[in-house]
Length: 285
Image 1 (cartoon, rainbow, N blue to C red):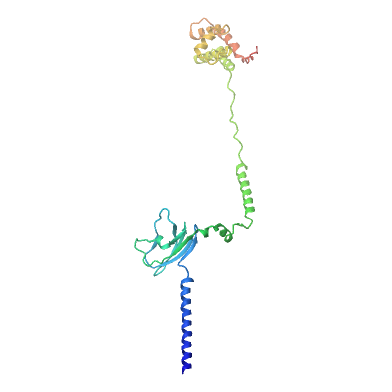
Image 2: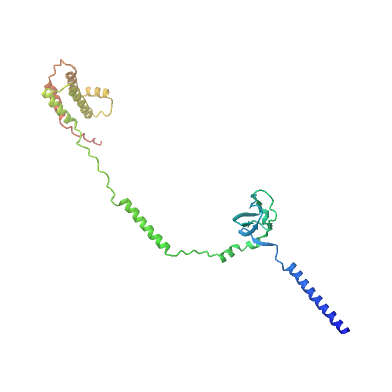
């Protein structure tokens, strides 16, 4: 009987010890091995969080200057009894933050029952960020299909096409307009007027034209230049060569009872019907 009690008490002790070990293991796992209630994220790198919420429509809280976390909604999926929000966030400085602090209800009500999503901005994870990006992303971009050769060939064809548009069958410059026959000289005009004078058909208009031509001839011979006609007329009248012919011409033109015969005027005009010789070049002293 005593032996049976001994075995029974020993079994109870073993069972109690096993139960203690199980409870102790559960407590150790709960306090020392449980997953942390926040995650560590590098600074300046966009992260993603999926939130399922059945309350009012969620939107991003109004932006404030100097905020530690930048948040945006990438996508919203409608479900019959809830909505699934694809939330993207970037941590700007170290510290512990809760994503729900940066969300608000679209209608301004309280977000009751919105799950907490805590994270820690860890600057240590950002020190070798460039190195980690280079390890995960391929920097070189290879373009296949002879892209650059094709681009060069198309460029050459485009230049040829442009040159053809510019130069092929391009009309030549327009021909110079026909200047027509040269204007008659003063000598030629005087010859025509002299013929009419000798034939007795020279009218008042012809006489006035004859006077203007002779005055221009005398201006050229005396090299008077672009001076007023009144000044030129005085210079011609004082000239030894043209003064006397000018007085005879004006007396014949403006005095109907003039004693100057037409034959004398014809003889006066005849020397001027010859082409004037070009002026001799001035000799250097």
